[in-house]
Image 1 (cartoon, helix red, strand yellow):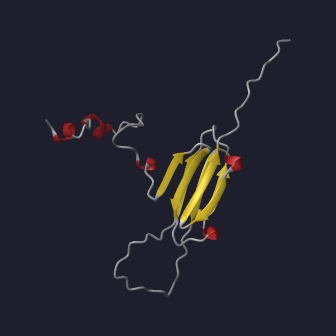
Image 2 (image 1 turned 60 degrees about the vertical axis):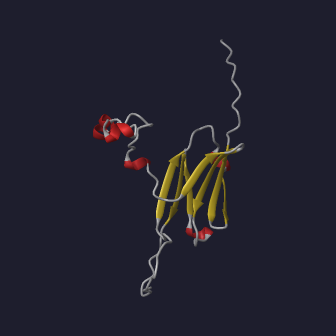
Image 3 (image 1 turned 30 degrees about the horizontal axis):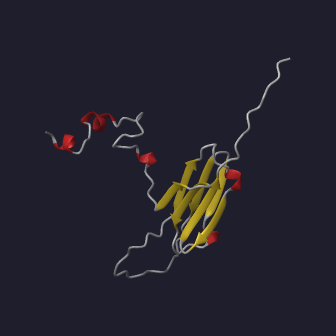
Length: 137
């Protein structure tokens, strides 16, 4: 038994990265999010929670373009301030995150709030579309 088979990894998947399979063990780097964010569905819609400790609501931009939600922060570099860190564990970096949102959610009614270092974005479900009856002429 190879080490790869022990972890239930297909060696073919490693070579070809199986771009067509979303359940692939090795995802493309575009799918990886390098920022602390939780995304989950609630009873009322979709919720995003981003860790934005130390940022003010004026430091964050939220942009909605058709079915894409984009959240950005551009870190301002302070010149002349040099710090001698003993330990540095807080990631103070810029981010530019974007997600394509399914049509079952209503981006027009997005609600955002900043609470205890978390940016919380709620996107409600879209109202159920009633079937349209077409009369044949």
